[in-house]
Image (cartoon, rainbow, N blue to C red):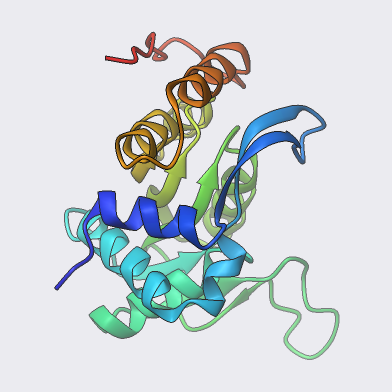
Amino acid sequence: MVCTVKELAVRLFDVGAVRFGDIEAMVGRRTPIYFDLRIVVSHPKIMMAIAEQLQILASEIDHDILCGVPYAALPFATVMSINTNTPMIMKRKETKLYATKKIIEGVFEKNQKCLLVEDVVTSGGTLQETIQTLRNEGLSVTNAVVVLDREQGGASVLKANGVHMKSIFTMSELVKILRDAGRINDETVETVIEHIKQYQFGMKDNFEQISLQ
């Protein structure tokens, strides 16, 4: 039986993949919520549950191959590839300096539809870098499935670059689920939602006011 989105949110919180507090973010700002999916590799059942929810999103998208964005999303893309018998490729962090000198590992053909798999999207910068690399190799990249959309402008930036993104959670949905499950309180929800409103990256034209209701 597939784990529901609400059950998955609670399980991620309980294993420490979702943490709250005054946390220093990679972009140099403080954040009240930190989402670390790297620890999920130590929890196979949760990793499978994430892959299954991503597969549900992917089932509505026409694609030939998968590409997990390094490194956190690679395990999810791998499980999806095995579960659905869909070929997978991997983008290297840097071009191989010897032998094949590849930036993309795996077998693919030009113009194949490649579905991106990502863990968390904030500004969309990491995804854009991968998109450009794959397009430079002749692949068609127009869709991405992600675990968490932080609702801070990444989806709009990707849309402007011709990529439609689907997520298991938005950050506002996630905190409301955890509030309703008794894991966090209303004050924490308000703090997170205020953070979303204050820190936007890139295009903002599609951003809507988020309500606690």
